[in-house]
Amino acid sequence: MPFRSIVGHTRLVTLLARACARETLPPSLLLAGPVGVGKRRTALAIAEALNCLNPSSHGFGEAGPRGSAVPASARGAAAPLERDACGECAACRRIARGVHPDVVLVEPGDNGSIKIEAVRDLIERAAYRPFEGRRRVVILDEADAMTVDAQSALLKTLEEPPSASVFIMVSSLADTLLSTVRSRCPPLRFAALAPAEVAEALARDHGYAEAEARAAAADADGSIGRALAARSLEVTAARTIAQRLLEHAARVTDPARRLDAAKDVTPKKATPAQERAHLTVCLRVLASLLRDLGILASRGDTSMLANVDLEADLSRLATAFDGERITRAFAAVDRALGALERNASPKVVADWLVLQL
Image (cartoon, rainbow, N blue to C red; front, side, top):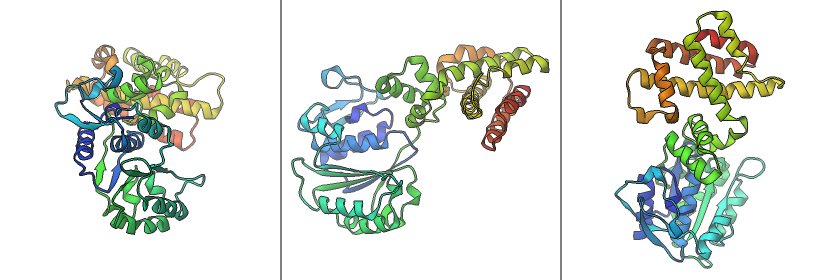
């Protein structure tokens, strides 16, 4: 996974590639940001760039080895990647498979924490020179899962790191780390991805069809990880139902006929838990569509649309949803999600919601 395979985060990736090329990478780093936006992948890309046997440089708009695609979200960026892994040599392949002796990945155990024993082991390994690579890279994924004792044990190593080792902490809850740990690790803050970037990653790396990728991205809140976790809940179908619900609300005012639309929102022959899960996804997608309607109704920047492939359909709907109605509907969706969290009946929530749109 070379730098060029990372979707989004162009500025951070360019900065890291330059630091690897000029040997100015700090001995410890903290990659902080939301869950599922590419922090761990970036940490592994650093390990590859440092240990690749055939490193190269690429502009974001150039093709990689054997014509591999460069992320569309990064095309047009002027700054080149001063150093990038080839992704094909023995070292790159072993890092990608997690079997390189000089790339140590530490994750939470079965109990959800990283204990002091695991940290002591990696400290001992980091004290020796790399076995075969240029640099030893220690990656602590979900670093916030370290116990207080484990973090304390790591302090001296972070203060005086071995010359041939790099420590990379990955965390979506960086503020929960000890302040003494954070002060020793320069932070790189990752932002949520744009919906188009999430859709690109889903289609390129996870086999999503285009429509499926766009639907999942609209509901993912900028996180590839969240989109993947929700795949089994048929987000594409949920978006179709949510769109039909808005179209029905736009043309029907009779309450009794409005309630007919609620039947589509909860699946037939499903358990209460399945009904709740399905309705939750529909509501999150509905909130995304309402947000896009707000952008279109106010004639805002259409590049901010989460459901860009539905722009024409939503533009037609926007004539029936003014700003006040959209705000009211958005608030109703938020209340409905809260009611589901409190175990309200999905059917009751669906009936109430369609009357509020």
